[in-house]
Image (cartoon, one colour):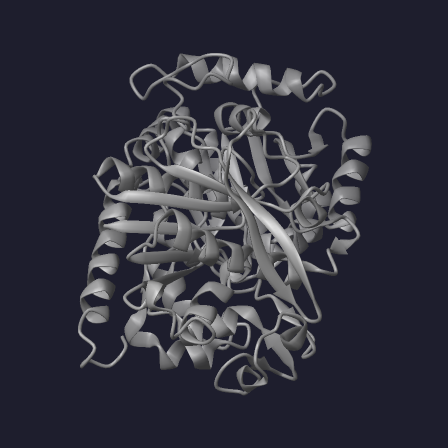
Length: 489
């Protein structure tokens, strides 16, 4: 089977979140299974390629009353997966992928419209797939274009589309005049297509036109069909319920494994946990905490500092939490108010709170290995990866019971020594604080705690099972696409 992935980020080339991990890992598994796999990503400033050869020298992209001309380069480096990068420096040679601390780039609609059209035009030259697998709103125009402006193109007559929602909160909503700017027809601006409260919604269009829709956990696939979690698209998703499926994200244990991790101070296994203490000491030294008490439990955070991630709850309790018998280390960036909160607490509690405002992959590994607990109190969490990494590292997750967090973490029951972490349901600061305090209390019983650690380390959330589920989706979509007498799934 020929499968083409289109995503706005992909490890190891570019990353802001879990989308990049999926776009980097799933294609490799599909290629290893014998499928022909292409991946298209924008060529960002942060993408490091050594003299990539041009494979499509010029693609003409129409915009309103003028044209733009981009190219496609090959960055595969001998991989079984062919990685293609859409090169248009005016759009992608910028400091950030989607924007800066001041906000999103004003021309994001144009940037990713160019990307989507370039993927389609380049595919006609390089390889037309059986399946386009598109991810999030930045690639949403691909299923829309295939069903509208490219509907009569014989090259794509038998091509099916699978669309994955990584976070329904990010939709690509733009003013109505975006349609003529991108040379899209006005008949898309209806409530049954792309119109959304007077604006144009890219994600909605993909949900209408894609042949199949996936999300990154089973629970989230149901949550987004409710008013609480659907962000206004729950009606569209309900109407497509028969073609919406949740497939839990897997993790790459070649990268995230304390037994082999090259970023951490000492490797360790469930049979020999002694290296974790060295990792804890190294972590605290890396953060330059002032005379930290090594006997205190360390709570780690690696996250975007955003409301979705529960930082409003953290801000409600941080002054009280900082007085508990614990140390907190945080890595991330985002909302300035949350960055300032951590910086203020670091100043007031220099031996107990430390923060680094950055994206730092090596430090993220050190936090997973050196922390005793990992905090993820998300308001909603489609899938989540850090809680799964934490399990493997014997770092006990403290999470809110939502989406992928609820699906992957089992509440600890000390009476029968079962479970892998601590969960709370009510989205309040008090519930979060009570759950953290319970974890701190359980930490005092180290014999029981090590059983809890090993429970988590024994879990297997590798990509093998998830890849098989995606393969089932691809096969189903192809079968239905090949049967024109049947209704679209």
